[in-house]
Amino acid sequence: MKRNMGIIDRIIRIAIAVVIGFLFIEGTIDGVLGIVLMVLSGVFVLTSVVGFCPLYTLFGIKTCKAKA
Image 1 (tube, helix red, strand yellow):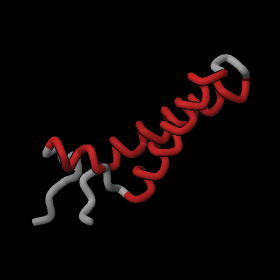
Image 2: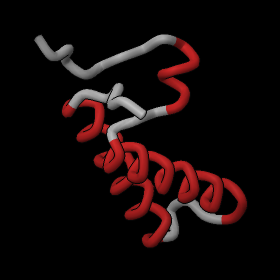
Image 3: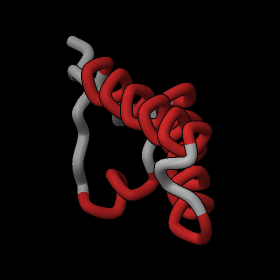
Image 4: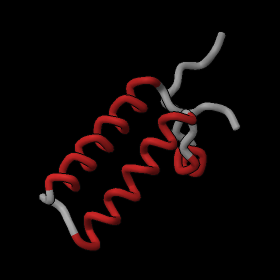
């Protein structure tokens, strides 16, 4: 499993996950939508830590810099 996410992409995903988590804790988003968004933010954090996104592989996207 090779990395296919660049550092900017990973930072953006973590920032989105933090915002979603904050909105969920504050009660701005709740119910089924809140749970779905919290699961999505968990996936964002997991893929950011690992540096690999399976959807990028399906669509042929690679945001990390190629090694020389």
